[in-house]
Length: 133
Image 1 (spheres, rainbow, N blue to C red):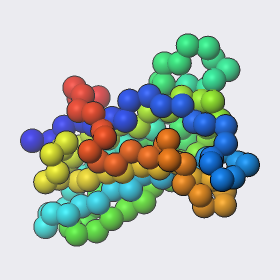
Image 2 (tube, helix red, strand yellow; image 1 turned 135 degrees about the vertical axis):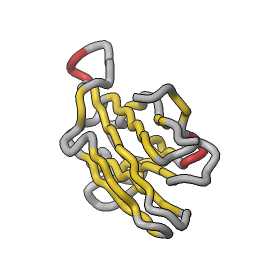
Image 3 (tube, rainbow, N blue to C red; image 1 turned 90 degrees about the horizontal axis):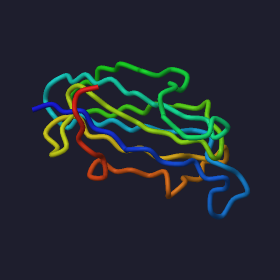
């Protein structure tokens, strides 16, 4: 049964280990391991650190993004428009489920030089199931 999954809120670090740069791109990887076309909507929201208590309600540019994924393929979405110290939250709804069998998702933050930020990595198993968006 399809669900809505979320990362929960997380903070963008100021510097990625081994670099002197913050992550500037949020990559959302979607995989459809099934034999059917699947559709999901990805919400990437932010609360700028300058706003005080974060609510994570402001969408990043290009969010929400609805996508249909052919059987047996993957798709990579890029989100930007946030800064170090901002709080982000990614939510996916549609043909997705916590216990595989539908679209699988993972996300990671990446610097301009292509280094991945480990504290911004969420594999499918780390997402939380929540009521519909």
